[in-house]
Image (cartoon, helix red, strand yellow):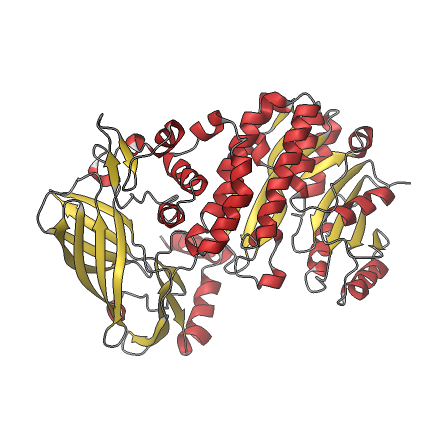
Length: 553
């Protein structure tokens, strides 16, 4: 008798994590399943591990490809050829399925005849365990979608692993993963969305996606290899394949939504890295990206936030130093250093007027409301121009503040650096003095030995914020650091030596490149105090403590 569901676990040289992935399938609340470990010709101990797992459970089958394909498509496709169940799912060896994932998605299929069911994805940071939902707004409510045209925003959820497919649907359309390219999920999932008559969305988590942001280059996932130009080429190539499919299949009306997704998600991932790329890389990046950007729907550009449109335009114009500056503000409300008005009073990003009508439209920053928005949400740009180590665990900073909207009157202004290693904050006051219209500068001494670290210690990273006070109002924003400088490390014996820590001041190394302070407990704080506090902080312990307090009242 055939199983109800086949779950394919693809793997390549991942012997250490494969057992975790397979075990997550074995413990599913719906047990009538088939598990196919599809090994893309691993050269480590993966084959031995796979055979051992298969020997323990008759539901597990081990498939080994005769040669390495270099991607995810071939091992998935080969597994589909031998899968026996009417419903199929895909799992990567470094991820997991929540215990009831199969049960939830299979129930959706059994409620009505649909082509696939999809659920929420939980992203787990391996460096700290933080959990967040992937695209939570897309899976917030349970519903059955009749045709992707009714909800084109779902194109943003392009993962093949968050879905359970009816095998008959895949076979009817000969739907398989494209081999020989990366980002195969995007094409496969777009095709599935377009070809499906109906599919059901469930809000419960059905996939656990582990993120290793600091993985070694050779071990990094495809999405974490954005520094490789081949990665850029593959992503653009897949977009062209998707465009061809939409046109050929009669779904051309989706092109604007698909283009918006590309600009908002795919290009945006590279944009955040631009400050860390050299001139040669940026030139090659523009050579690959710009021809495709020329084909993107103008209405898709118009749907983007202004800061993202500015970065796109600067890349297209090959104004790379300015693109780096603009990219450091993405997602953080950081103002440009300078704006330029034209004769009609329209204001543009940068120190010169755009030449073409398209450039004027993209670099017009009127909607940033630099000179009119409320002071608390105004946009400034705070940059560290000089950083010097002081005595002990202190640093002296020279900070330049750019105010292109001329919100700050001429004169000195009260400012402070704020950092919070725990529940209380450290405040370092200083003054910003005018340099020229729209530019201010100040000097601040930040002594981390006086930070209010809790008695039980603090382990984590914090980014100082800069606050400006004006006429009873306060404005707080991020502080940009030099993109590279030698980390400054010191041991601080907080609370007269009972809470020793190693404290490191460093550049953030990604995103906007903020000043970053890292606390790491050492000595007895790390060995004894922190483990006890973590045990006491567990939900069951906290609930028990609340019950005891209630009983004693």
